[in-house]
Length: 182
Image 1: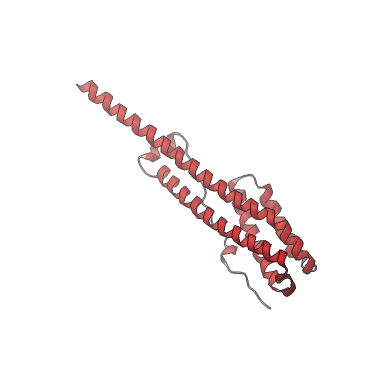
Image 2: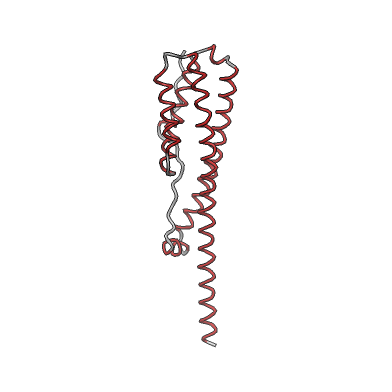
């Protein structure tokens, strides 16, 4: 009878360990899939930028420095290879785009340009999608992080080397609204 109880306890512990391990894998994969959605939207934004820059160039030829910063930030994002690099470069790109849109406010004929208006609308829509995707990613990362840090699942997480994923946080500079002056 004692052996049956011992076997039953061992079986329950193994079931719990397997279930916890599978739960951790599921949460990690869900967070990675959420990051992939952010990456899709950030890439879409990066693909729109050359068109926006070219449209603005025609109206604001002397604003070359701002346009160059936008292109540099875009290129930095495109060449980023890790999630941390992508997050940092996405923040820089957001700041550069904010400056570009503030610049566009200074050119009434640019604001009236249909191509620019369409591109600006697409960028705005993409920014909204990025915000939603970022929220879902951070929610998934929080669930995953809770699972790897809370006892007793933390035992399985440390045993099988489950590491925390970074939250996608806004850069300090992007938390401040750009100044528009006429």
